[in-house]
Figure 1 (cartoon, rainbow, N blue to C red):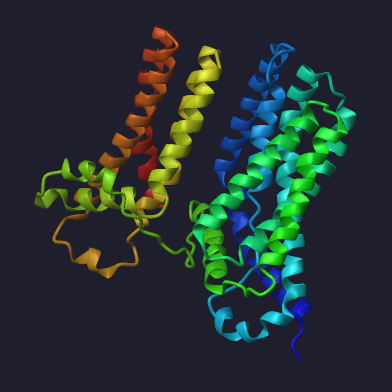
Figure 2: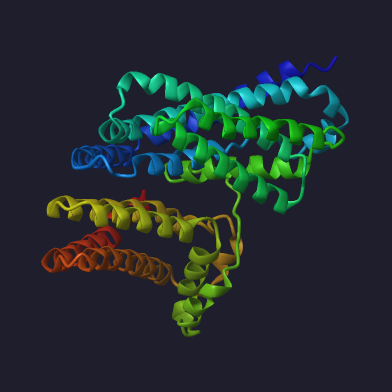
Length: 403
């Protein structure tokens, strides 16, 4: 007889076993040491920055803006696989316990993230609003309760296939969450907090009524589950080979001009291949944008010169290290070996692309410092970033690729 609880335990056990095997490689990697150092440096500067805040600083609005995003983003991890839309579809009415456990697991996982972010924001709240650290657990409880309600709403919205419905749902919930969190952290009267809280509860009843006669969108749920696992596999692939990693290709027409800059010549065969792969495949281009934006923001707000140079070099290292899998991106495609191009030209094309990317990132970091009119530091940062990029590409990466 079919038992949904047994099925969930099996799926969760398989998930824990698989992620655990990859986490061993991740936490044993030297990248973690770099990240810990980076987090420690950021914590030091953040603590010094909090000391300079005045009572009129809009801390409640900033906290509401950040925490509302975390509370609103509430995906439910279901552990569904491709075969489930055939074998489990007839049993959909018997899977309520299975999906209820999925919601509870997602709540526990995402509540841990809420705890970490609240711990980061709490010193700012205490400094500006004169709050007590003892209120931390009360605030955490309220945020977890909000997260639970948001998870229920999001799960109900999953019964709709329309993209517009999901966008409007996220927009409405984000607005309500932001207002409620703002009132919570500005020590507003309970009456003010009751209005957005009631609105959230009414959304639960509304979507519950809307989806009573609707079934699950299995293909959509499976696709989202695969996308989440693929994100994890992409991180694990930085440390070890991941056979289950699926490549996703996305055409970015607005970047075609970059490819058109390369002339069509025999010796540039791999240059075209790696540039197009960087722009269109996986998340290489998005990775560069995210790390450049985060590193640029850190450089803009930090003022300590040596610390700024260190931060820039750390972000250049993180970018370069996470782009190294680009070298093996096509390793399972046999037709690549048919190219009548020597291996040394392939390596030359790859290292040139890496050098251009990292020097570009160094230039952006230097430009951000120059905008602050720190002229000497900006040029020193550009020289240091360029020198480190050359060292990383032509020395460090060569040893890593051989391994």
